[in-house]
Image (cartoon, rainbow, N blue to C red; front, side):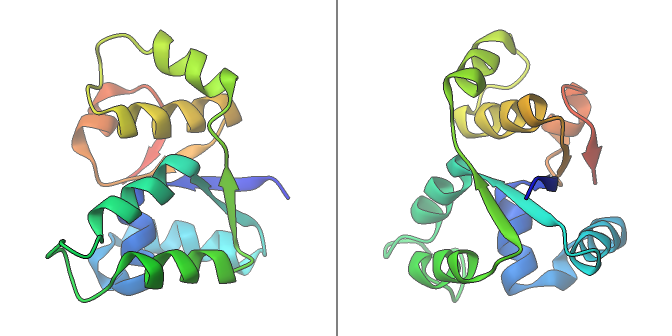
Length: 134
């Protein structure tokens, strides 16, 4: 199944743990995809970010990495998109617009697969490197 959207890391976490933290447009867009039984794409980089953000030493919330990652793994709505050679080539081609390697990988994944990225990251939105839902 081809995903209809790509979700940035914080969007995945909020969707699974605190959906009220998402914008009305983000909620509407994600719900439309879910209602149509289409997949929500997640970059493999997002799995690593979740593992780091919610490590045992993290104070980022009441959830641990295992809980969030198991929610992703157990839901058929999510499709993990790998970091391929094509994605890595796109990362290299982005130029200086984004410095964070995770942001670069996620944006490049969206570009390679022709997906809109659901994000609240203003740097990504302002870069205009990929269509976004904010």
